Picture 1: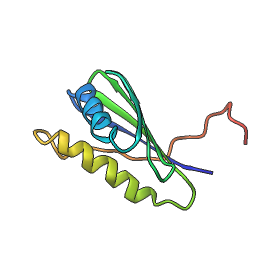
Picture 2: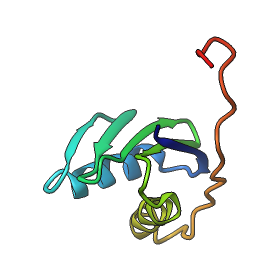
Picture 3: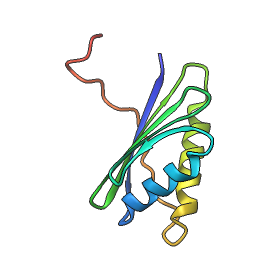
Picture 4: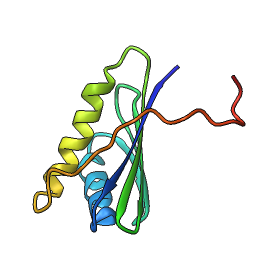
Amino acid sequence: MPSVSVARVPTRSASRYLQQLAKHWSHRMTVASDAEEGTIDFPNGARLEMRAEGDTLDVLLRVPEGEDMGRMREVVSSHLDRFAFREAPLSFDWRVPEPRGDAPA
């Protein structure tokens, strides 16, 4: 079962950073994105989902069992910080999402 982490990143440039990261990784990974949403599939089976809304960039990171969640969080945050150099470091409040009441146990 994959591990999941989410973060809400405050930034006035959420859409721009989402698009820059998607373009940056599109040469080596499977990427689907537009100005508001994006997904990036990593070779190790991890998946990053992003959504730009107003002054925040919401990210959801799924990492397969056996992969290092901490390392993947750092990969994502360090790459976004490169694009956000004027306001870096961005504030990532990484956390494990609450289980949904409608999800099977």
